[in-house]
Each structure stands twice: as C-alpha cells, then as structure tokens.
Length: 234
View 1 (cartoon, one colour):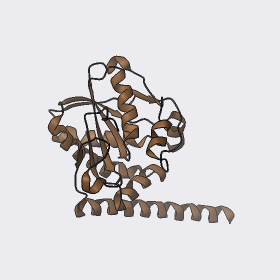
View 2 (view 1 turned 60 degrees about the horizontal axis):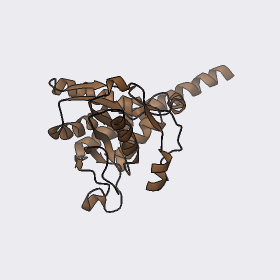
View 3 (view 1 turned 120 degrees about the vertical axis):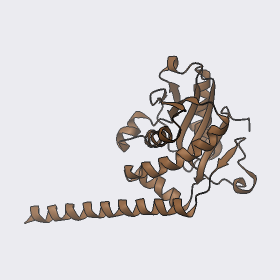
C-alpha cells in the first residue's frame, strides 16, 4: 500500500471494551455526555502528536453527510474536537488551534464503512469529500479529527482532498484505533506511525462512570414517560 498522504496519526486507545461501548453510545444513543471524557482522551492523543507538529494548526473534524447529521442530530467528530480543544486551550495556551468545521464537506452520501473490506472502504469514499472554504486552507497545517481509525481509508480520502486544495500538511488524531490483524504486535500496516496511549484503569473507570450515569438518566426518562402515559390513560 502506498504511503499515506498525512504526516502522522495518533490515537489514544484501542477500540475495544469500554472504549467501543462509549463511542457507540455517543454516536447511536445520542449520549452527548460522553463527548467530554472521550474528548479528554482525544486531547491526550493530540498532545502526543504535538511533540513533532507545528504549534499553529487548523483543526478539521471529519464531516458527516448533511442528511446523516440531521438524522443523528450532531457530528461526533465535531463534538470531540470541541471538547478536546477546550481542554488543550487551558493546558497549552501557546498552541494556536482553530476549529474549522466548515472547511471539509461530505457532499456524497456513502454507505456505512463497517463491514466493508479495506478496498471497499476506499472505493466507498471515492470523491466523497470536497473543500468548502479553500481560501482558509491554503498554506495551513491541518489536524484532522475523527472518533475511530480502522483501516485509515477515511483519513486518507479526507487528507488527500485537503492537500489538493492547498493545505501544507495533514496530521490525524482519533480517540481510538481498531486492532487490525498483526497491528497490536507489529504496528499498523498502512504506513502510519502509531502514537498509542494506554487505556488505563483510571480511564476505564471514568468511562464506566459516565456510562452508568447515562444509563441512569435514560432509565429515569423512561420511567417518567411511562408515568405520563399512565396518567394520560387514566
């Protein structure tokens, strides 16, 4: 496989166990409360990445197609990027990171990537992205943000479009990285450099606590709804 168009990729943890559950709850159960702890993990991945990156960068969340974003109600990459930047601005005020949510547009509605082979993923994303604000991009170093990197197909497609539009360089930061065959022992096979932080016990407990809080809130809401329906029936 050809070298990736981005300079470097960093992920905080492996996409499994509590990490997988937390990301899924955020994306599919509308649990925006998970954006803050996951954004904190993303901030730590960015910190590792910044050891060899310019202090001034344009932060570009991977976009959803407009229809899918309306259905979900939000773009998880945008939420995570905002949460991470909020934390990084306090810890590293010298870093000049500008959130650019409108720079990249997903103008082609694609099939979900899950379940596709690496080749199918690349074909699925062909011509899926375009740049919406090329004048703000030219000559800028970019930091591409997403929730999970699996084969790197999304990052490759998005980075290629950004570079063609005039970006100086592209780096990628995600909350998690999927474990592909042979990756855990020998490193990713797509040419990226893995800067993987450990998903330690403290992090796992933080996620478990937020998941429990969300489950409690959801349960309370269901109970209240049931009570309302009972009162109406009466």
